[in-house]
Amino acid sequence: MLMIPVYQNRYFKGLKIYVFYLFILGVILIVKDDVIKYHDGYKNGVILPNWFYLKDWGMQWLSLFTFYRFSLNGSLNEERLKKYTFIFVGMALLSFIGYQKNYNIQYGMSSKSFGDITNNAGYDFLGLLPYLFLWKNKIVQYSLLAFLFIFILLSMKRGAIIIGILVIFWLMFHNLKSAERKERLYLLCFTFIVIILGIYYTLDLYESNPYMQRRVLATQNNDSSDRDIIYSKMLNYLINDTDIYYKIFGGGAYYTVRINGIEAHNDWLEILVCGGLMGFSLFVNYWCCFLKQLVYAKNYKVCYNIIGVCLFITFVQTFFSMSTITIPMSAIMTYSMFATENDMDY
Image (cartoon, rainbow, N blue to C red; front, side, top):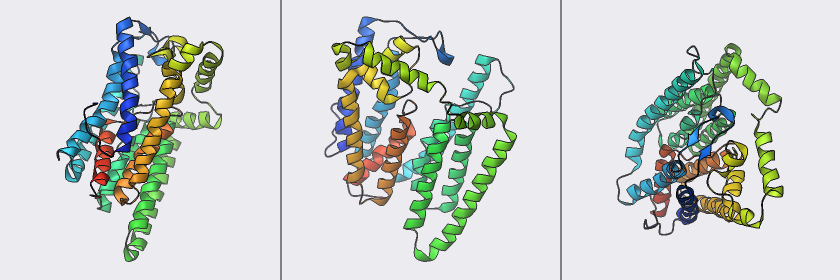
């Protein structure tokens, strides 16, 4: 990871040092041979192997370096990314079905179908939205958009649905802005039809799905799925129960699970508790470098939008979930960064 050349890439300069700090936390956990056990939420009673921290973070972050290397040696390009779109969609669909089956087995609910539970695999479909910017053929683009949106909606993940809708409007605005004047009216009508169909499908699903109705009602009643309780515990710990050492360096990998029984469901609190002010400052620096990379790409229309959408999706997630950069998102994001650095906007 440290040997991969990044040249002028601002993003990786911030990512390297942050990932290295997480690596240190993971190694310390393995050396100490601590037992981490969930005692809250749906994972109650689950024991985490002490190497799991490195596996979890490694799967997410190291794929970024891998795909950037593929971009450098020419193994990753626009045409391959278009082909990979359908492979990644298939992988997301299998993940979605697998999550549903595992849920039914775990809770003995064989009758549960799509849309009847909260399916975390919805974030896999959310991570595929940047691929829509690759397709100039609007039939293919909007067909993929409809497919991804349906499964994001069926996941019943409120955060994913809100982010997904905003990204879709981002895409539509980009299409209208970049269209030729004589094509704009046709595209505007086509976009309007797509929006109407999307609203109709959403309302029809809402009317026929009691679980979705409960989720909407919970949102209206400010039900945060106990996140307010989790955040309160974390903040109370940081303010009242830590000495100067823990404030600076944190309690170590999975320390939120130790004191709360479950992760913080907020990346900022998670890194502050586990990595202290040191880890928190590196996390802030990471996002600053991500933003600088976006600004650097401002003259490259498609790349700028792809990097911007990836930044938007992952940054917003940090405030209510554990932000993840999926493998498909890693591929398109790093190639877009490589393309801007080599003056090859596509």
